Image 1 (tube, rainbow, N blue to C red):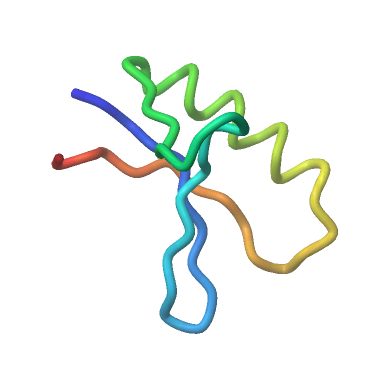
Image 2: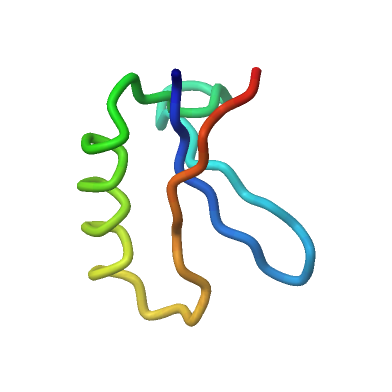
Length: 57
């Protein structure tokens, strides 16, 4: 299963993208995705938090 990092604000979902393209970042490991999500959340000043979501694609 693949995982991606997402945040939702005002009913709109935003997926974490690769910096060099418009592709969503996909992770093979939920642990790897969770580690990055926690780093993102610790560095953001926004009330909107990132979360890990299983990718159905």
